[in-house]
Amino acid sequence: MTSPTSVLPPDAPAWPADIYRTLRERDIKQVSYVPDAGHKHLINMCHADNQMKVVTLTTEEEGVALACGAWLGGERSVLLMQSSGVGNCINMMSMLKTCQFPFLTLVTMRGDFGEGNPWQVPMGQATKAVLEAMGLIVYKVERPEDVGPTVDMAAQIAYDSQQPVAVLIGQKVIGAKKFVKKG
Image 1 (cartoon, rainbow, N blue to C red):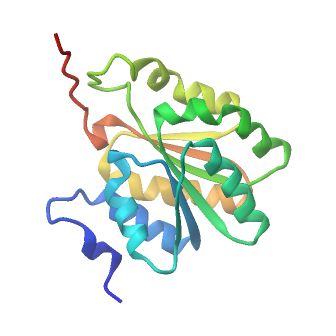
Image 2: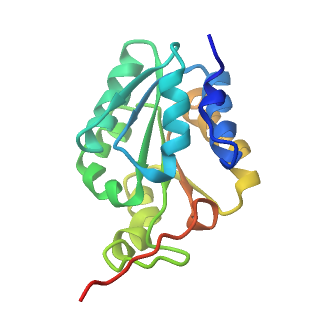
Image 3: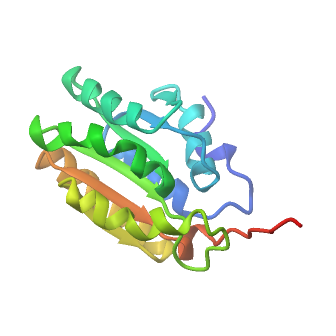
């Protein structure tokens, strides 16, 4: 088997590989996601790993239910999403605290540092507060070198202390997207 990190292009940032290594070391077997450019390299590595079950979702809240089901079935999972998808999950996230499910989500941020798309700003600004209101422990990462250690500790608290945890990967890490108005 070739290494899943071999699917990375030479110019790929290091932080997606850092996350991938953490997922493997923390025995996370299920990965769910709605396609997202910010998670593209991580998603490709997970797809290349025949030890991981990777599920493409139609909407982010399906990932919350999938994570709960994975835990009930004896496996650990992670939900990858963009901050705009957090709003889709709020009702489903009530299950995490009520039923005391461990949960880990990695959220690539839009609507913060340097955002050029006005449609991304409201949810991007509300993401942390919304997740905290739903009872999640939230960590935000603003430097690429902090991504791996933060995800590692988030996975530890999620699965060793059975807590719902979110890591927000800021636009200083993933890069701000350009938005071009037409007309």
